[in-house]
Length: 145
Image (cartoon, rainbow, N blue to C red; front, side):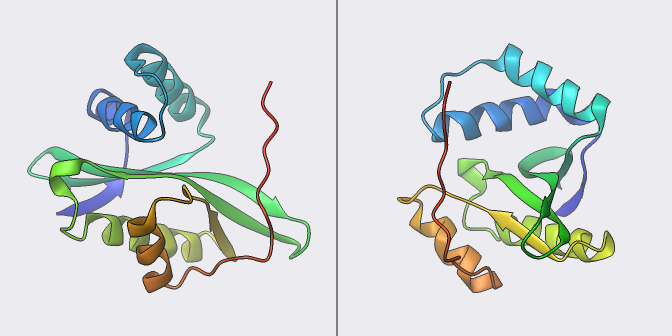
């Protein structure tokens, strides 16, 4: 298995994974909008997507968005998505994706990687702690329109 940065050639396979990610978080399946979203991200180059690949099959992906921390006065990455196809879970795919994210973050001189996950996603939380992510003292809020 290798982890590499996604390209436009990955969009069709990546669309399937991202749609599954969204369904995991109780969103409606919408492959057309997911494809449009992916094309926008790649065309505008406003996110970084890594894919885990084995024999030309995408096993999982992660997506980063650049941001800033006023408290730390630093540039950061927000790890917005981390998803591994169900049949490949437990094989270390997520760990390798996270390792690639951390290496990329160091190479791009970002001082932190922020992420969030569902309160009930205990497996992901265990992995994040194992790799070295820490809980913060902040509570996350959202306002939906």
